[in-house]
Length: 273
Length: 259
Image (cartoon, rainbow over all chains, first blue to last red; front, side, top):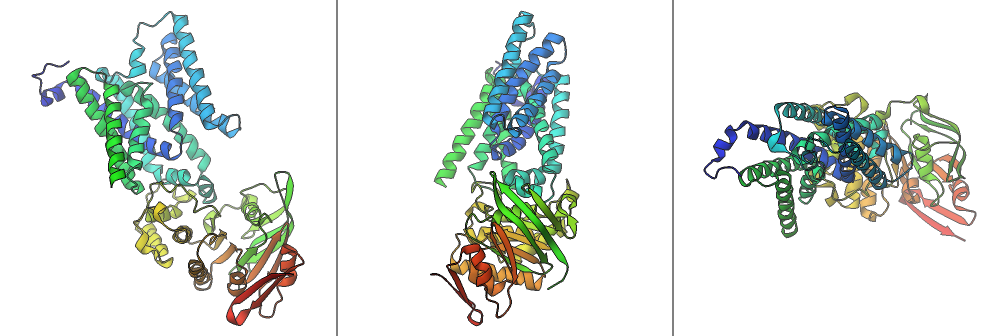
């Protein structure tokens, strides 16, 4: 816990805190926006499956001495493609395909860890996030990945919206549904990976799904829904970082609690309103 | 009515779930036609449209759109299709009417481009034409069935299509709203010269307003709707021998009966 005499302004002068805030806001921005599409596509649980698969990628990276975030990125992309392939070929429904990938990825991680006899690196930091200890290189990676996601979404959100609303009609309109969906899947994998340092494998689903779920209670237009979803994601993340820095509690836990709190308030407001 | 064929179908065969649904369909739709597609439930009307647009596979035959074989046709912005279940969307979907209608401006050529002033002018003009400007800020889930149909046609209009294809657009809508909808479609056909194909169960509206009739019941037959035509010969092929339809053109009224 930080010294009680430390003010909020002092906190912002610490480099670790600046890194945490910048990384957290960027990741929350990307997660919330992509999360709105995933929730509307009823594919939010794909994130849970892919993030757990990333655990296998992290273990493989540590085992072979590769940057675990990069190996997790490769494995996550393979997982997203695997889920998509299983659905298209009729091998399994979306939820079943996700379950298979989740189990396969996590089992891979367990086997690799047992073969290695444990890792010196704290694998728990990947499971539960370690935003208050992200390095400059972590922040650079998070920033690059976030910007890639945000540029893609800024350029193609209208087309993604049309495909999300009605895939068949979008195809009829001549939109390149398959390539755009494939790139969207890659972007989902990238978003998951950039969030691992922030909130961890286990809770990344919250950062992606809860802001969108809260916003949908308000029954807004799409433009306003995007803005509200991003706001909820960013506010929850910043509150989570502040509270965890002051009171030395798990950041990811506080972020999720804040999000769920906002969700409940919004749901109550929507019901009463 | 123009003489240029916009849709040509020759010997079209379509199977669904292993059984033949469309058998050897051959017909032409000309520029400026207003075509009613009728037939019993399950007779293959929707299947015909989907196969014609290449949305389901066909087992035989040729389809040409604007003179091009369907496999080589790419000018999809010329054609707008409003499917039967378009209005059955998730009512919680966060979209305003104006936002949804603006999606009609998207195409392969505009990929990644922001909508400009011209696009929004087209959107507002389409909303105005369909008489739903006052609903533009409303959420799409709050509209009635008739308003939803008009919204989807407005979305189609933003593409400035040359052909609009509608699959049962007035199903489940009250008679007054249906009449307004048919009137709007007649305006589109006559004032804007748009070729329209519409699946309908309302034979009176078909005979009163449209210029051609396609009857679908596995067989597909086409006829011009002209003064003095006896529609029964062609309608019986779709609905059966004991079916009678008497149409009073001057009153725009039809009577359907069975022996």
